[in-house]
Image 1 (cartoon, rainbow, N blue to C red):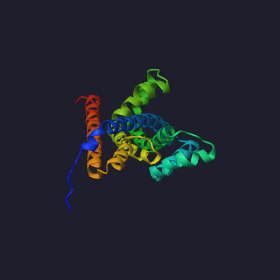
Image 2: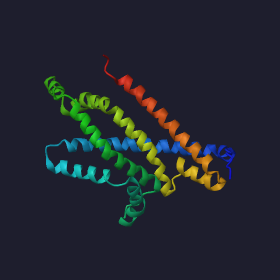
Image 3: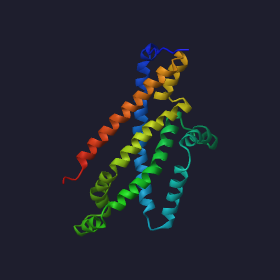
Image 4: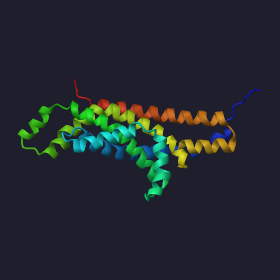
Length: 220
């Protein structure tokens, strides 16, 4: 039995897909910003000489990186309220995504910090800069330049992970696509368009990241 493609139902609801796409991007941006803060703080703890700081940081990274993100999302939304921590679905999802990305970014930032020559810190101290000034003006800018490709890849991966928000009824792109699919029964058309939106968005993000890399590259 043949199947005739008909995208009319999808086009009628295309504005919902675009709204879902915009929400997916917003969720990813907020999560990556919080995740960067968590990852950077954790990276400094991982590099600490004191086991009192290093071991809890390592435990956090190990547990989060070895737990499926969907399990973390469901735990935050359904289990935390049983423990007295009540968050709405947007807050619980963004927090979960931020904690998840923070565990991966911790290793990215740790590698980036390790790649900065130790002599730069000594040079900063020699001209009278304080530790906070050295980190903010010298070490962090160089570290960001070194880790930008990995940071960009993490952001793109995080954007794709926002599709899991449909599991707790957040109206992002995948949720809206499922809604159109159920209402129109145009399964193939709905998921073709949705897939193309994901691919196009990820391609644009990758291109923007490459532009940023070229702008931040050290001239040869």
